[in-house]
Image 1 (cartoon, rainbow, N blue to C red):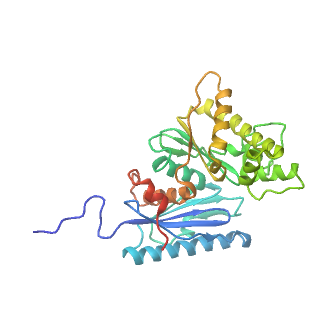
Image 2 (image 1 turned 60 degrees about the vertical axis):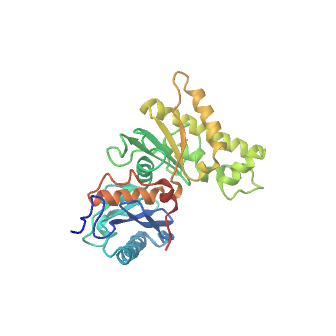
Image 3 (image 1 turned 180 degrees about the horizontal axis):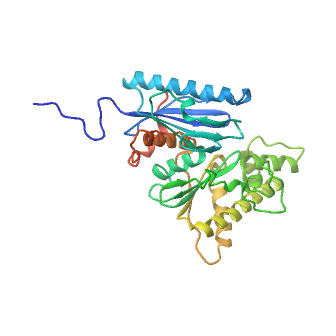
Length: 333
């Protein structure tokens, strides 16, 4: 009897890609096979305090570490490499990042030669992961709203993140909600991020309660729930700002859903219930779209980078059958 030939999803070795999610202060990386098996490594610092060249070197060292691990584990180099990075990004160039300080860094600076690689914007890459693997699976048009230290969005249209004419699409955090409001770090006035980001909740609470401190946005939310009047006002402002911003988005693009992730989304129904009420009240002649909690958590960027890696490898449709529980869990060697 002749040996069975590998099927269409098989090969002589378990095919895999290297995936890396680069944040402002740390990186999360892993290996992801074509079948959805995840091997996640512990995070690494970016070293941005030492300048952009140090960050590029740190990324390259982490990628090399992942390639070596994959080659040892699977007996071959990866089929592709995907990297989610902040700032203005094309598939081949990290054009600019204010947080890191780099300009026009080619993807080749991050990866070994000979391995196909692709870059993606960090939040849009997270939106891609939620579209293919998470809360947006089966939803063609939605907004992925990431509420963390800042606020950013990924506009997903027809299942694909929309980058806009110059790769800056989705900057909902810097869409003004109160034209006569507070000045944002970006230089504009009244931006959503100034009122509703996790860092804004802490900053605005401490500014109004100089005798008290709140280490995190979770602390402010807990104080608001416990009846602290200042925390309640700050949290109410955040919910109102989100509602105003999301009304404009809903009226303009008519999304099927809004997927909310990031640290503030961990407040759960404490955030979702009042936001749903405010949004419904402002949308007087149409129903609001459902607000869905993101499904992939802090792993969304890394899993989205894996999808970019498979795109670079010429396998763009991989991932839609990966089991969500495995993607969340993975393994740390």
